[in-house]
Length: 203
Image 1 (cartoon, rainbow, N blue to C red):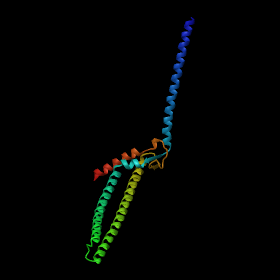
Image 2 (image 1 turned 180 degrees about the vertical axis):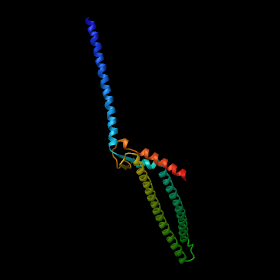
Image 3 (image 1 turned 60 degrees about the vertical axis):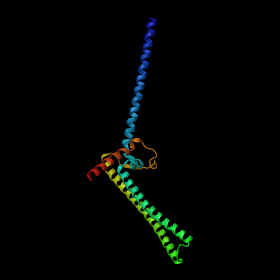
Image 4 (image 1 turned 90 degrees about the horizontal axis):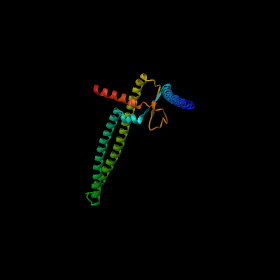
């Protein structure tokens, strides 16, 4: 009888322990689910999102296309300038050799050639400045075009999504911390690329 009582107590103890474990684990799962739900609700409560601008510009095909165009233009301009510079440097070396070897028939001819080369040097400096200014203007125009394209897209995008404010985050400058659910970069890039592909097909 005493052994039966001990067995019953042991079984009861095991049952209580098992029940205790089940209740605790169920409670922690519910707590985790509640925390996740709270996190989702918290994100939805604040209609704010941000876009990682660096990532967007790297992955947005239209931005890459514009950047490639600008690089091609820069390479072409630089190649043209370098060729003119090479010709000028050759002329300059030839002039110096003639001066050293008394290759000019008169002082006047040497002075005329020197004036011509100084004029050529000034023209090259002006051309270099002009090229730099043109490239800077094109860069600014490209940036404005991209900004207009993205902000125009976001006006439509936010009509279908509950965002009242979309921030631009470049290398972590503007947003030091945010819930990852607020990062809409990938979704925006995907939609922008789809729209860009459609516009290319229409052409």
